[in-house]
Length: 359
Image 1 (tube, rainbow, N blue to C red):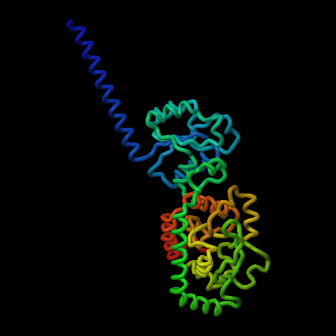
Image 2: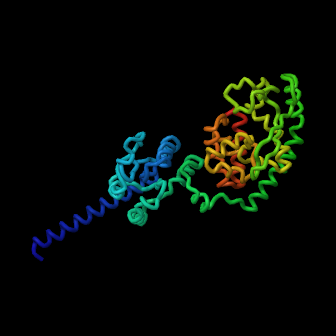
Image 3: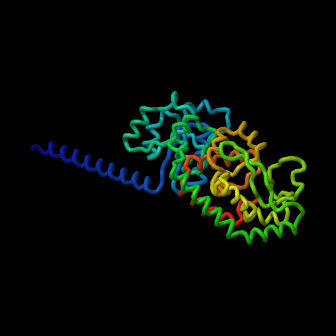
């Protein structure tokens, strides 16, 4: 074989080996990055994309990294509040994925029918890139549902929002067992609380009030009175921070959540459960269902003494707070399970001991 031919063959072999080494190194590097942290690219510049961008930065900065946001057309977002993280348009999807070593693409379109780059996403999916639904990731990271950008089809065709017979039976069994045991064991404490309330202010020990329960049916909720007897002489009001209507004993009862314990009677009667969305007053429900989408979905389960919203969000004191609490309530309704109930009960004990979110 001529010398020049040997040199050409050797040079080609060296180049192939170098290319293989580079490919192996890049593959290992990409795999190593994926193990440590998700490098994510968001498709879409609407409300969901912005909410997801903020919640990932605040909740999972060590596990997820949002490299940027791709929008359909940059000129469409001009004149609106600036969206952080925009790095280009949909046409640059493959280029950005390659250059930035993206391993996860999150689709956050309001309407996918006209703008979804299907062919590019299929190719990238086949190459091993994760393609996730924006609502699903937002739900996993934040523990709530983004109701403002949630389409009805996402609820209708969701695998959640189903109450299995086994779950309902186990939930009711625990409700009855705990409510009976609690009423018997806590009766001495109830007598002490009643005495303190009587010594502190005039009026009844037990306060009963209509709330909206399962399937929108009203019922009378039981509570230890924590406010003055004339607290609502000016009409129904949201509870406020340092509310002057709350009595001295009432502040302690609310901080420890002991004012809610008479609701074990409601649980025993089947009007409530230990865990579920907190029931609201009828006049508030009438207003909230007009301004908050999917509000009545929280009435598809029994209301609870405690709930996912109570362990993850502060005490609700406005329509804005009710809007945020509904997002947590819908997460619970969608994922309702015996295990989730037990998790919430454990977290409730922590909230009671720490006095978190009291008002």
